Amino acid sequence: MSAGAGGSMSAGGNDLSGTLGALGAVKPVMAGWATTNGLETLIYLSSSPLTCAQMMTKGVKWLASLPAGTQVVEIVVRGTALVGTTAVGPLQGEVNYAEGSKSSSNEVVASSGSIMFTKAEAKKVFEGTLMATYPKGSLMGKFHADWCEGGTEY
Image (cartoon, rainbow, N blue to C red):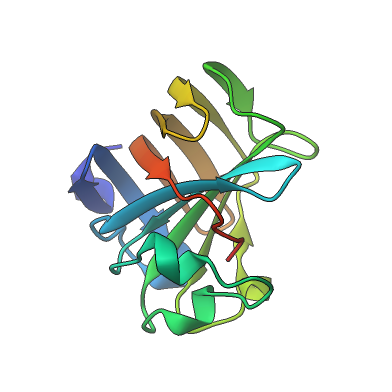
């Protein structure tokens, strides 16, 4: 898919394109962070500025604090992320998205796709490519996220 088939976002090693359903064409990534929830590695790519400190909410979901219209892509892999490819699907990897100002219960889950890590340095940096298909839209491209110690789920 070219940028002409949807939006394109490129910043800090992020170069994603596609359409995220009702949120429309993919917007530029302003922040990319990685953290864990204990059993999973979580990566968040936000189209609005997002600091690691904002993600350290201890039980309070931070997604609702972002402006309406913000696109947040969530990449989830079971256990520790490793260099290699993970399929998107039940009990595998996830590539979800949700809108800022709303609850994470409104997230849209990809029905298929893949996550390929080219760099997976625990507590440092995570990079790779992804492809995801949604009921209304798709997403593909490169991602980069720095570590956020103490960050929580959206």
